[in-house]
Each structure stands twice: as C-alpha cells, then as structure tokens.
Image 1 (cartoon, rainbow, N blue to C red):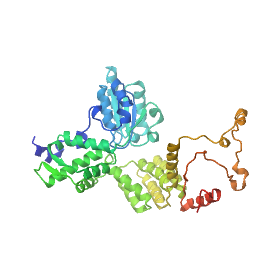
Image 2: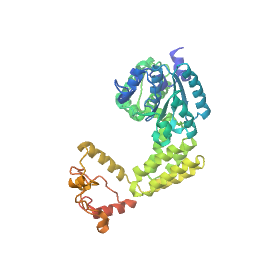
Image 3: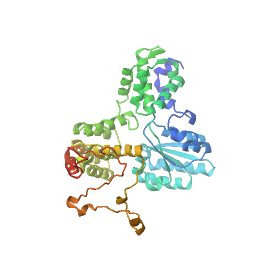
Image 4: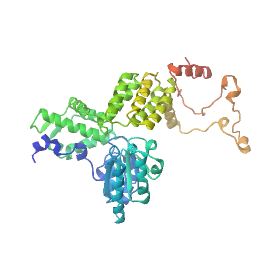
Length: 441
C-alpha cells in the first residue's frame, strides 16, 4: 500500500493514540512514581504477580495501556469491557471463560473501563470471581472510586493513583510519534517550539488528546498541500484540529472534558442560561448524570462556599435525588441545582483558606498543639498542664473567649478571608468583632 493511499484512507489505520500505544513498560511515558525501578507497577510486572487493581486517574494517563502491559508480562488472557455498554450478561460470560482458563492454570485479567458506571448488581456479579481467583480485575476510573465502587469489591482491590502527564512526558511522546509512527515518520514535519508548547498545553496532560489532535492536524495540513512530504504546522492548524474534535459529543473523548469545563465555568461565572445549556449538551450526549451531580457538589464548596452555605446542602440533596430516580426525570433535578448554584453569590474564600493552610504546613511542618488546647482525661496529663488555662467560650458573653488557638509558629497570614458577599458578609462582620487585629475593615 502506498504512502498516499495510507494517508488518504485513514480508516485503514487506527488513530495515532492507538498506533502509539506501547506494548512494554520501557516505552511507557509518565507515572514514574509507579513504573520506575523498585516502584509498585515495575515490581508487579517483574514478579509476574497479578492482583486486582483500581486504576484511578485523569484521561489519557495510561490506565488501559498499563493494564495491557501487565497482562502481557504475566502471560494472562486479557478481556476488556466498557462499563458504559457492558451488561451483567457480558460480565458473566467473561467470568465463565475465565473459570475455564483458571482450571487449565491460565490467568485471566478483566479490564473494566469506567468501572464507576457499573451499578451494584454488575459489581456484585464480579465479587465471587475476584474472591476465588477466577479473574483478576482491573477497573479504570476518572472518578474517586469510593463514590460508586461498592465496598466489598473495593476492599479486594488495591487503588493505584495516576497523575496527568507533565510537559516533559508529552514532549517525549511527540518526538517518538514523529520518529516512529507508521504515518508521521514518512513526512518531514516542521513543528516549531511555540506550536509544540501550544499543543502540549491544549492537551491538559492527556496523551490521547494530544496524539489525536496532532493526528487530525497533520491530516488537515496534508489536505491543503496534497502530495507534499515536507510541511510546517502552525498554532492556527492546531486550534482548527481542536475545534474539529469538538463537533460530536463523545463520552470517552476530548469533548466530554471540554464540555464539563464549560459547564463548571458557566456556573462559576453566574450564567444560569449557559450552565443549563452545557448541562443539556452532556445529558443529550448520554453523559452519566451522577458525574454532573458530583461536580456540582465540589463546585458548591469550591466556588460558592459560605457566600451561600445552602448551596452545598442543595447540591448534595441533588446528588441523592439523581442517584435515586435516574434518567430522564433526574435531569429536572440537575437543572434546579444548576440554576440555583449559578445564580448564587460566589466565594472561594474557604477553598483558598485550605490552600494557604497547606502551604503553611509544607513550609513550617507540623507544629505542637498548645498545652491549653490539649485534652486532659487523666491526672498525669493534668500534672503536665494539659488543658491548663483553656477558656470555655460558652462561659463568656457572645459565646467567644479571646485566646490563642494557633500554634506558636502559626501561619504568617490570614488563612480564611471571607468576602462581603451573601452570608459571608455576616461571617466577616462577626470575625471583625472577634479578631479585630486579624480582620481589619
């Protein structure tokens, strides 16, 4: 098959991300905390040991690739199911085959993508097979597994956390694709440094998104200069390719993450119309409504916080309602929660207080708890002056006693800085009365 035929008929080949999927650990990019020599995955592969895992991390970080590499190294039969489309029947069919393999001394690894989308009955169907060793299960999820993976199954798995790829990782993947890919290596592609940086930044640490964007970009540029084997790629070409990828909603692809980003930013930006629009795009595209509901709970604390404490209550109630009734009626619940949160006053003060506290602790380490704040349940502790001098706030007017609650080497800056918005305005006014030196108007 000629070079031109290959490229003019992309259906003949899988996407670049699939073509570049490594078969061995030495070609795997990123996750040094797991795959470096002496680390967990490296040791697991070297020992050919297999035990059930939950691979938790952002998209495009190598969850499926790691599962395939581990299965190959352990000489295990590999099955892959997507929780979006698989049924209990599909799970039982794999388990039946695995039991047969097990009887012949052959290991079976079942990889379940988006395992958080499996309902309880589907997860229950896995339990016995995992317990008796018929299968080793790898579940992949972008969500915190403690949300939707049932406790009995979770307790039989080790949770492995993957991180987004950094610029160095992605830079190396671009070099390898240009050098080794069956299509891209046939061309002299000029990818200037500023264009390369733009491609990497647009990928958001997602290798699959980066590869697929580069794949489409090259096809678009080649379409403008048919027959040419030497061409340059511009930032505008990358931007066009990114837009091309957003034409159809794909629950497993880039547009999924771009749309949830637009949704969150619309709620944060207090635009209920835009928020409901993007929410509806996701639901009409088949998005898991619980995914949206979880994001709203996080947003209620991160972006609204104490400006309207009712936001978290409503977001959590919305999640429970969505969980209870499902589609299509739960869309009404999501619309109510979305419009309420989008219309609420916004404050990230509590979120920023957390970040400042983390920074302080990283800079100064863990400090000793002052003696007067320590509990003194025994006489010996009282002898060491535990609890001595502590003032019980309810014994004072206004329920407040002025005393030190921070350690001696506490933060040098105010951690919680409430805004004069919504309920947080009332909080700010009270804190000024309690701590006038700390909270100056």
